[in-house]
Amino acid sequence: MTADAAYQRGRALAEHLNPGMEVALRDRYGRWLPDAVAETVVGHGMGEVYAREGLDLKTRLLVTVGALAAMGGQTRPQLKVNVASALRAGASAREICEAIFQMHLYGGMPAAINALNAAIEVFEAEGTSP
Image 1 (tube, rainbow, N blue to C red):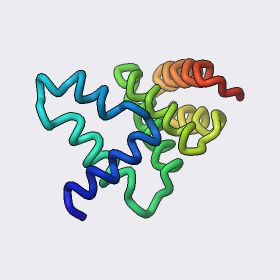
Image 2: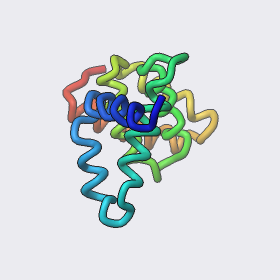
Image 3: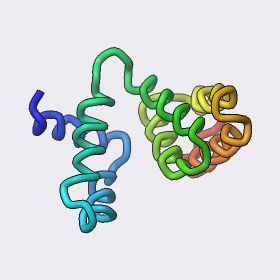
Image 4: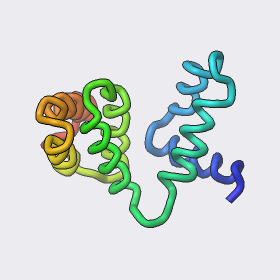
């Protein structure tokens, strides 16, 4: 797949999961890192990694949520974006909470509690019930 094809595939996926993400990345980082952050997240992240065969999108996002939860509080903004994306990909609130809770074994209970709190904020903002 060409880089342009990956970027176009990533652009469509990003817009589905997180409408406006590409523009937000360009607006925030484009002045400082032209042609870097948006292109990497959209082209490589979405177009090449998230669109790969082998795992469905919902599973990929649950894995991402778990990884971000285990990394701890410094990932809160990315965690919230990925929780919302997981919901859009068909994950239930319970599945998301279970993925986060599982990570207490690896990142510790404080990281899991912080991640659950971030997820609950997303659920409440999106009108998602348990």
